[in-house]
Length: 133
Image 1 (cartoon, rainbow, N blue to C red):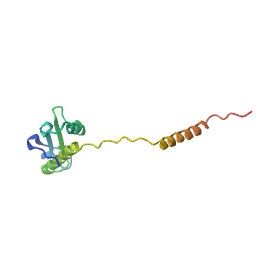
Image 2 (cartoon, rainbow, N blue to C red):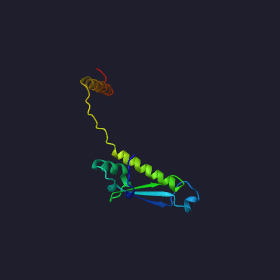
Image 3 (cartoon, rainbow, N blue to C red):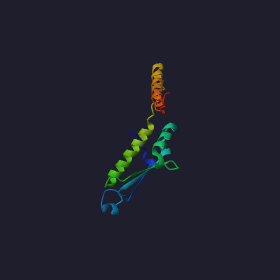
Image 4 (tube, one colour):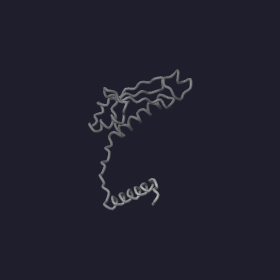
């Protein structure tokens, strides 16, 4: 779980859609979490991964916006927003495993070519039949 400084986070509560019935029109329960990504002090490669993962949730000034409105209470939505932020940052901090290039063996190449030749001969037999003289 990533440690996020409180100075980098600002919260706003809005009237949100979602569950709550009439309550949703009266009480501002949806939580909008804004995070200054530059204040997190991420490494350049982690910052790039976070930007890619965030997509349209990242603004041009480097602010990450998370909107949580799944629950009926402010506290639950605040906790949900912070958990989603933490998961996003944790995913960005994980370095992807490098792909190891593999090569097909000679036998595998030969099997592939034999299969293609067999298929080609089947298709060649589908041509028009000519009467023999």
